[in-house]
Amino acid sequence: MSIHCQLLILILVLTLDDQVHTGEIIGGREAVPHSRPYMVLLERSMQDGETRHCGGFLLNEDFVMTAAHCQASSYTVVLGVHNFRNSNELQRISVEQAFPHKEYNETDFNNDIMLLKLSAKAKLSKNVQPIALAGRGDGSPKSCIVSGWGRTDENIPYMSVVLMEVNVTLIESKQCPTNNMYCSKGVTGPGKGDSGGPLVCEDGKAYGVVSHDFRSESGGPVIHCFAKIPD
Image (cartoon, rainbow, N blue to C red; front, side):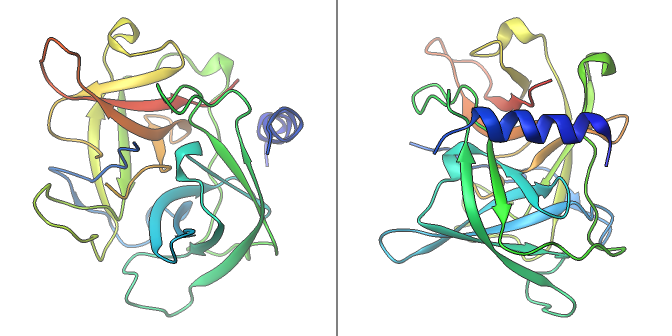
């Protein structure tokens, strides 16, 4: 694991404390099986007894990153997933502790990032690998990919069985609701069940976390928002 990733985790753990639009991959394609071994399917046990899902991504053997709005009573991370109906070689690990960003804003989704400390170490394999995080010197990304098991159509009320992915082109930051976000626009992109997944750009690093959709009061295309990962 890179020094940058280690420092980021340390900084986040030290600074984090104890209406949601969660996205669907619209206009995307099925990912090549296990081509994104950092992807995590996050099972969220809610207070009403229901189980809901978000995405996430593996930082190292001990930590997963997801969106802060994916909070729940308890969590289980599922690693090594492509088709979630195929249970072969999947790892299921409960979450010991959740660290939502201490400055997360539930109204505008600013700082929509959360760290999850696993109760046991993830066993790394060809299907389970961490992803590197972008640093301050990595520049401004333009062409990226998001992936997840969320809905593939706004009119279909259930998740995709297989991991889907879609290309997104980032727009100028002044069009984003806050400075702490990357954004793309248009129908194609993430939208219910994909929140918490990574925004992975040209160099294969994670630059952001799938957060929410936004539409200005004056109308116009949907803006897809990704929380920037802190430097």
